[in-house]
Each structure stands twice: as structure tokens, then as C-alpha cells.
Length: 61
Image 1 (cartoon, rainbow, N blue to C red):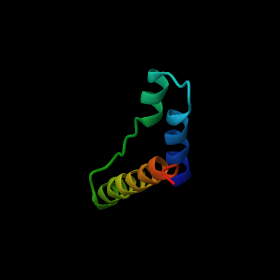
Image 2 (image 1 turned 120 degrees about the vertical axis):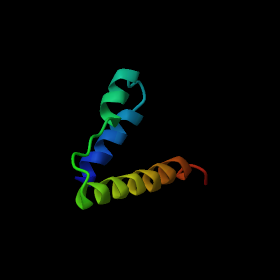
Image 3 (image 1 turned 45 degrees about the horizontal axis):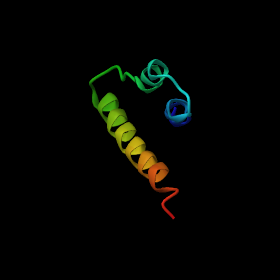
Image 4 (image 1 turned 60 degrees about the vertical axis):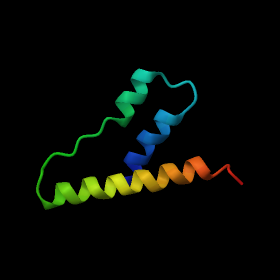
């Protein structure tokens, strides 16, 4: 599942990607408000935040 999320983020970041494709790639839905759904959204948020920070700073040298 993590790989699929990462693929969507990478597709959206690819140069020349239209705004519509970016929106489609980054639109994610978690169904269920129980403990598993809440835990998944928290993990997804943390994962994307860390990944995006890493990608943004990767070229900062």
C-alpha cells in the first residue's frame, strides 16, 4: 500500500503533469472511522510529510 501511495505522489510531481492529473493522483480516500482507518490516516499523513520533506531537501546539499 505504501508503494501505491508513493507512486501517486511521484506521478503528481512529474514535470509536465497537468493540474487535473495531479488532483487525481493526490486524491485519496480512507473508508472507515474506526481505529484502523484513523491509524491509517495518521500513518499516511506522517509518511507523506516525511517523504515530501526528504524530497524537498534532497537537493539542498
